[in-house]
Amino acid sequence: MQTAPTASPSITGALRAVESLLLGGGQRTARRNAWSAVLEDRGRARDRAEAQHVLEAVAGTAPQAT
Image (cartoon, rainbow, N blue to C red; front, top):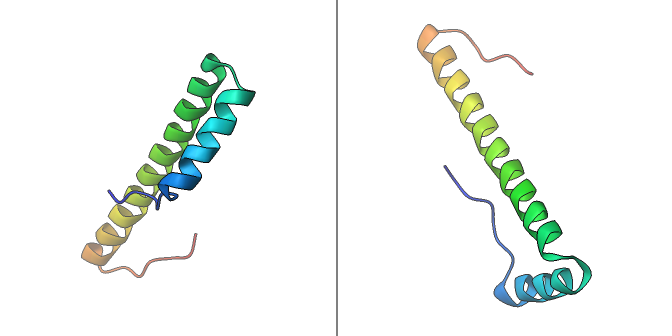
């Protein structure tokens, strides 16, 4: 599975510093967990689409627009 491009360390560090000032620890953790879940869902959706294309190619059917 491919990972999404990441921000440069300086931008990431600055955003985390602002986040730590604005949010409590629990909220920060919840946001990170939610974002991780979003990325995992995107990865699973991409994997499902790739598998569908492979199965359609093996079955000899043309892929249809979704």
